[in-house]
Amino acid sequence: MKSLSAAALVIEGNLTTSPVLKLPRMPSELGPIKAGSLRIARRVSNFLQAGHAVASYEELQASKLVLLRLPDSSVERVIDEICASELVLEGLAFVLCDTWLGSETLHRLRQKGAAVATTCQIHAAHGMPYFAAEGMAAATRPLRKLLDRCDARMIEIRPGTKELLFGAELLTTALPIPIFMAAQQALRACGIAGHPLFTLLEGGAQQMFRACCAGARLTWGGPLTECSPEIADAHFAGLREKLPEVAQVLDEQLAWARSIMGRTRCELSSEPSKQAVQTAG
Image 1: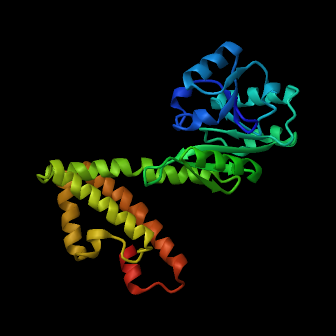
Image 2 (image 1 turned 60 degrees about the horizontal axis):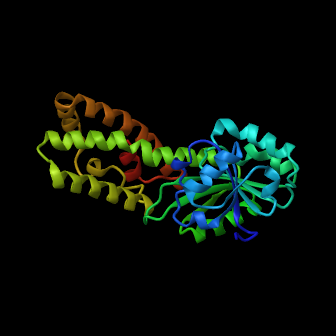
Image 3 (image 1 turned 120 degrees about the horizontal axis):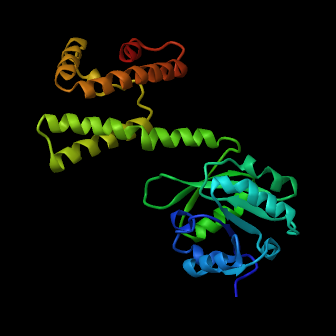
């Protein structure tokens, strides 16, 4: 028998891609499972080897935490169904899982007395699953306890800032990929391959990360700080001749980076040093 505190699950769509449901200890935390039909709910319960299928939303009442695992396109309809049911929402916490939607999407549940939040997996070091949660404390608090029991960690962000997290994830996971691909192309073109190539790419990434965490903005520039402008210009000219596509990446990214780093330094000091101004230029 599941305890009264077991989390409920309302699910539609492909459950095999859910980071939350893939947590090894999650099955032991689940109680009632509601899907589009009782047959589908039983199938989900059998697949997860967890919980028990229920036919109505009212049967979720004993669970204080309700996990919603839904396609974004189904969220509004399912919320309408929950609000139209006889489920007493006051005192319940609803968490919409595996989504980039913000907690404002669940405002109708909040209006009826429920606590609401959303969560999605984020990339972090140390090999442990990390999830970002955004919403009301009464919903994020039980979610944190649940994830702790499942050997995962939760980072809470301010309500209404999901788009900022979205931008940070793009900057750290998507945008660096073409840059590192261009670096790999340049290394291969000068005869470096195999393990040495991997070592150089990994070393550069780690050094960049350590410098960023240490706040080393004034020394930003890598090789640009280690040679004269004339030598740098000569190398850029050679790059444009031998690997024009890589040179184009550098031209575009350095222009953007200089504007960012220059602005950052001006914010840090009202009187930037000569070295800082030269580095920004």
